[in-house]
Each structure stands twice: as structure tokens, then as C-alpha cells.
Length: 218
Image (cartoon, rainbow, N blue to C red; front, side, top):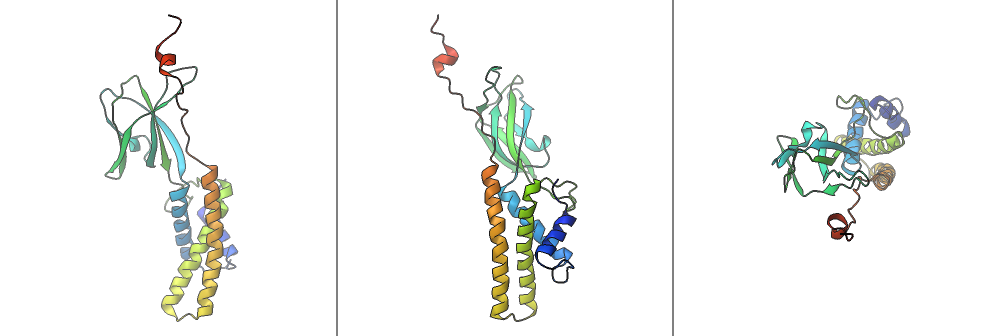
């Protein structure tokens, strides 16, 4: 099970050597974790899919009717009817957002006997952050958020110090060096996650025209 916000805050403070929160307050670390999660979601969102029954002569469909958390459509497929191979065919479509709702418009309509498979993305949430009640990250990715949270915590702290006192060059260099280490660790985990999790790809139809529509036995 992935960590809640409270647990992540504790881990970030600990990795920064400030378990008591003397220098890095809970509010600061929370803001840092929020930013780290935002970065993560832009690169490693949740890949999801839903089926929608087609409608005669209908071009436009609303994805948020099916999933209110949907963010971006990856693909729209026509589910195959071949029980042996079940090959799905990619459809031409256009995605658009209206009133903060996600829609797609087919270039050609389908019928009520057709089923659409819509692949899309959803952003991760952390239990306790911005009213979320579930942590959807894989447990192995918690450390990425800790690294990212530590990086942004240092950046927030550095900004606040620069605004209040005239930092010496040595102090500024120390902040930069510490932040760079956590940024690199966060980036490495993001890249690993991007490589290990890719959106599903439909199997192409490799049949020739004469395989599907003609029999040489006739």
C-alpha cells in the first residue's frame, strides 16, 4: 500500500535531517509534495480504459460521463467481434475539452451494435492531499515522491531565506548542491517509471484483404 500524506511528510522531514520540523514546516513539505506529485502526473499518469456502447449516427461522446477523473484520451478503438482473435480497430477521432469536461468526436459514426474502447489517463492522488481519500501510487514509487518533496522543500526554503536575509555565496551553493542531489534522484525514478509503464497498444490487424473478404476455395 502506498503512503498517505502524513507518512510522506514524515519521510521528507527525516531525509532532510529535520524530523522535528524546525526548518521545514508541515505546510512547506505539503506544498513540496503537491508540486512533486504534479510533476509525476505529467509524466507517469495512470493509464485506464473504459468501454462505451456506440450510438447510431452519433459523432460526439463525453468521456467524463464514464469517468469524472479522466484527463487525456490516448486512443479510441472499435472492439473486434472476431471471437478467435478479438482484434480492435483504431478509430480516427478528435479530443476537446469544454466546461472542464473531456469529449471526443469521431470522424465517422458507429452503430448501437458497436462497442468503443477508450484509453485515457487519470492523475494519481495521495490520501490526505487536497481532499483525496486514496493513494494510487505504487508502493515502490513512494520514494520518488519523497525525493521530489525533499527537492521542492529545499527550493521553498531557499526562496524564503533569500527574501529575508542576504545569503552568502557559500550558503546559496549549499542549497543548490543539496537540491540538485534530490532532483537527480527524483528524475531517475521518474524516467524508470516512464519506461516500465506504457499505455496499452492494440494488436494491428495483419490480415490481407483476401483473407477477410474472399475465399480462394470458391
